[in-house]
Amino acid sequence: MAGTYTFTIIKPGAVANEHIGPIINVINSNGFHISALKLIRLRTAQASKFYEVHKDRPFYKDLIEFMTSGPIVVAILEKENAVDDYRKLIGNTDPSKADEGTIRKLFAQSVQKNAVHGSDSDENARIESDFFFSKSERFSIFDERDF
Ligand code: CMP
Image (tube, rainbow, N blue to C red; front, side, top):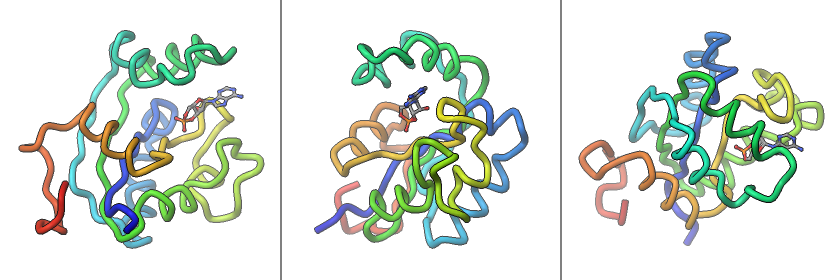
């Protein structure tokens, strides 16, 4: 069965442009429940670890600089089929290729400053959620399930 939660980041560009509220509104309007939420600023070591999978990519250094440039919002979102449905809602990594109505089409500035991150698998949703949130910071609506 597909997992019931995913993990998201509202990135520094979107936070700086006062898009936190509008993005959360789109998330809620599309049936996602916010189960954990906080505003934080990443240190370089944390960002490097979070994006380690991209460490050999040419954009890695710029990505780390950008992701540490200001506060971000991290959140866990719950919904049936959360990972796939949220990937559809955020749209293509490159906002110029994102469908109308997607979060990246609405709020992204560029491929790098693409407004939001969304987990790409249930396993990464678990790893990324655990990276930022302790059990006491998470409030599941599916409380009979593993969270
Ligand atoms: P995210 O979904 O957070 O995962 C990795 C990030 O790397 C991605 O969003 C973009 O912000 C960034 N990224 C991916 N591809 C490129 C690229 N070609 N140029 C610059 N940044 C990129």
